Length: 199
Image (cartoon, rainbow, N blue to C red; front, side, top):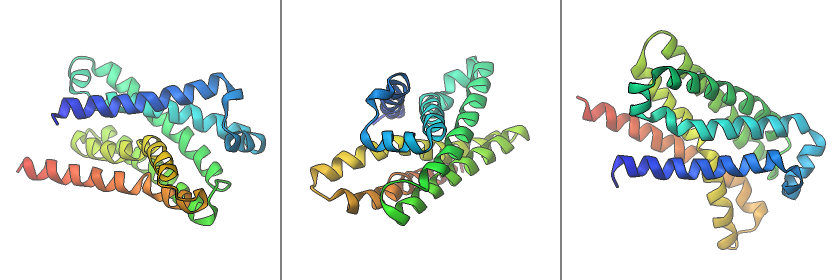
């Protein structure tokens, strides 16, 4: 599959998830039962996570657009700043939600580490662009967006586990890790491949 087609598919999935989050923000009555429960306990964290996650997953794919970086650098920079702020908001609220997530301690740990790594990779990407190291910045952004994309993979694994008749209480703790660890492994593979091909 050509790189442009892969990017378009990634962007499409990202925008679908962003649209779902936007729908929930506009219509809280559409919250699924588990989210209603969380909103009753920590409403600020729920709305902050939905808002931060929505902005990050919607803006993320466009940060990898060569055309945008080349012809509209100021737009790329402002989108990047918004993206990183969204990650900070989504990551901090994600930490709060991870402590009361479904699936017990295994799921709590998986989602907590996702939130921490999400913020850490975003901070590293910001650090390198501030020093003018665009190569390292791009590598950390690849890692970071692979974690942002967990919003998509989570919503692939859940219906998949249902289709395979795996009990939710067994599937969800595993999904709390599967939604982001393989993504990060693919990101590292892509970075290594790019470094190798440039030698």
